[in-house]
Image 1 (spheres, one colour):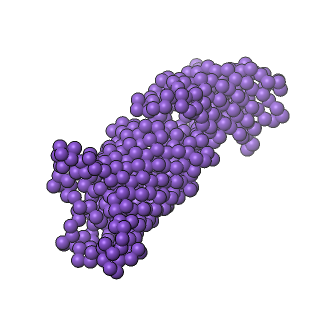
Image 2 (tube, each protein chain N blue to C red):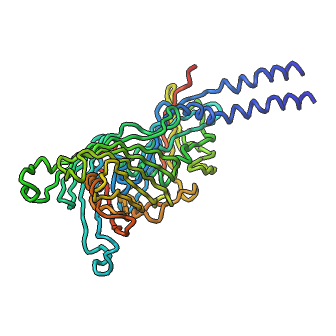
Image 3 (tube, rainbow over the protein chains, first blue to last red):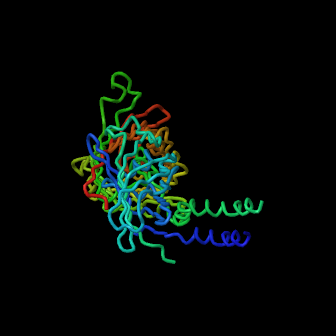
Length: 180
Length: 293
């Protein structure tokens, strides 16, 4: 009995670390909202992410300032007035992907469930997405809506442009196995 | 008992294995350089400049008014009957170099300058305490129309003046920024009994944000080269910045009416503390001509 248990003690941590870790090679998170005068869109291609194909655990982290807008002034306002990037420089997601088979190479419909942190506010989200395994790469995609008020993002009253109260977020990651 | 002990030992392992993904990502991103942004709302503090320059491909149209003195009373509609105007364009050649041209009705002056953002305040992997912008400019006055109005040996070149300025700013917090402006103004022609050709001044000013879109500002230039019998005063200004999308409205109260460095640093004729205060505004509109890459 003690032997089995001590074996378990030795093996379990190893098992925990010998997960199938994937690190994002290409990433992009974009958001889009239709305004009355002009549409607001930006993309961030410097997002870092880790995905564990064995457990489904996934996390991503981004710097708010890495969102690029066509209009640089809009980018400054996004950081200064809406996201308060000096106070809340990062956004992140941490959760689990479920509903996939790691041996299937077809496009699979999956669900991502976990904690999304934006503007210092963390909320549980549950969003649909797709997963595809091709060779030694894994790609994850998802599209979902984020309501500004859920994350306490306030639009100053003085702003003339009508800024939509929710934005459409598109997440795309291409992962490769961690090599070390 | 042993089983429980083993479970206790194992549990942290399992928890750790699940929760560390984000922590691992966070470890990697600590090395970034964070450049301070939006030290000021506009390229002007009140009369003079801030360290801010236009970003690459964006064009700012600025129109500024300085009305008559408020103490002109009802007859002068508290100064609103008369106004001096400056119309200008500022263009960002790169994110750190901008070029401008403008026309001020004060002495019918045409002005032009370049602003170079040399140093940027940053934290993170590189810590640097201040931002520094260099301004180099020239101004040509068209008034009076004829050289002979001033004197017989007055030439066109005497209408020129030059400005060199270091703008040193620090954003202390999201809401508080402060700026120092060592300045030199050279005038090709002066009334020598009253003025030096080269005048050295030190400006200081700052802003405090009241809300995300509204800030109060102040700006003062002290002229070290002022002669004893100079008829001129140092310019002082208090302002409110209001930002609405692509516009910045700056409302100011100041004793200066000119909007080029020669005019407001070295030729302000009114005394703020004698009540010769002028209301004025700067309104800017930014157009993005080229997409941000």
